[in-house]
Image (cartoon, rainbow, N blue to C red; front, side, top):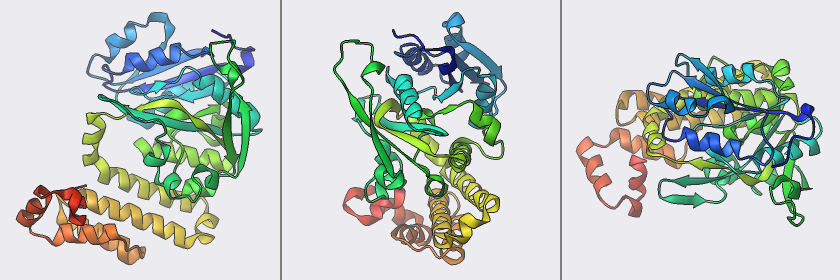
Length: 360
């Protein structure tokens, strides 16, 4: 395994873990298997009540463990980042798996983009049955999917870097990959496209912009950090899958929290506007459209449990923010349709009917 070129390039890997005993070992092992050895692996046990502590104990001195009461993803990321001693920090989630070359490639990409505040990457996806997609970023992020030329539309500068040195086989032939970079502040403020567990950034960034916010949690907390980082300088994106993203039944059941997540996103976007009024003034249509999308998504998420609340959220989307879409009409149908009829529609081949998306 190649050693670190010098102590100035040390990398701390931060992994929040909450009730992750089934997947955590594989995540840690993938970091230990990096061709560029991390300086330290910090795992924050965020008040787990399962066997997470026992899994961590099995790694002994190979990892540094921080135990804390459950405070959520943002709190765990903050604790891990605060403890990091490496020059660079790489984020990782407890249920994903790094490709062996991940740290080496991202360090090379950061070197290739002077002043870069963040480096993310493409990622693959898998579940209990096996691989789902070799490249999953455009399926995961609508911002990428809807861009005319994908990531190239969001980050204007492309360069090819040699990553042959990033692999364990020293006799490997020359291998290059594309790195996209540029000013992405406005694009990211209206829709994230950097997957948090793929991020690497210089530790000095925390001194410039602060750590992960305690005002929001989950994806909203990550989004806020990413946007603040992008406002401070260019970001880089490696067009190569450096992480395997695990899709599990637990994540699918988390769809029940979709309304809360959308409300957090709404509050975060409004916070961006308060923080930078010029962002809204120069893009009023885009700002209101994105808020409208979030409100209709929240309305869709609560329609089964509270039709009145769903109607209020939908009205906010349509009236306050002028957003009317096919999804708006579908949510309106869900709200107005009798429960028995809605159930009958869902039982009939949903894939053959537009109304089939009512249960999505």
